[in-house]
Image (cartoon, rainbow, N blue to C red; front, top):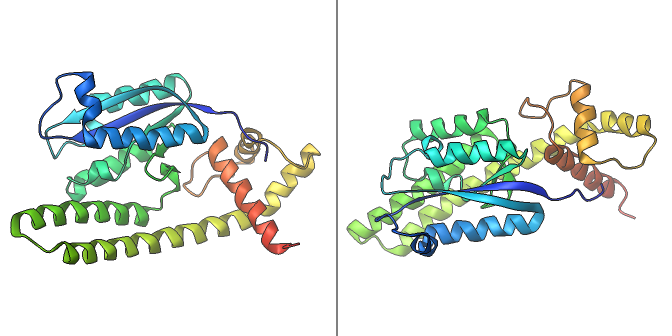
Length: 249
């Protein structure tokens, strides 16, 4: 599929700190803020044009980031430019929350009518299966809890590393299952995509045209939503990868 032009994006960065910064310069030096800026910069290099950033920095550990005014403003900004919302670290932003509050955040992201990218891994929010979201949240919470316990009780780092490794294994299994389901879905839509190509008389079409055609036919994405250029592009990529496997020459 031809390369698509870079999409405009608004960045959102959330961090829980011990002390609020007194200036923009001090804000930039905060480790969690600087790290998320780095993650977002990577995504910008991969296909986005940064159009601004909103920061939500708080000392309150139980803050649900989706309820912060800066998050609402970031969503409004992204919607105004028909762009994407780049979140520095989605699951890391939930590490201090109990399960009900984390689920509240997940549902709020599900309800957004804009594309949301987790800058940590470059994935669109709608690409995560429910089980994977829960697994990634638990992995982050485990890391946070183990760090706190280790500080308080002097738990050996090796023991903490083993527990975190177990969380990573669960995360990897969930990701593998999601990938298998995505390829099954692509295979099921292979004939439909072939029909779309035949109707256009072209060997390749843009992601936006493919998304429009799928939506016109009333075909929903795996999340039951309309197709976007990004999700259509991923469908096309999977189909091309399967073609290569069928014809290794």
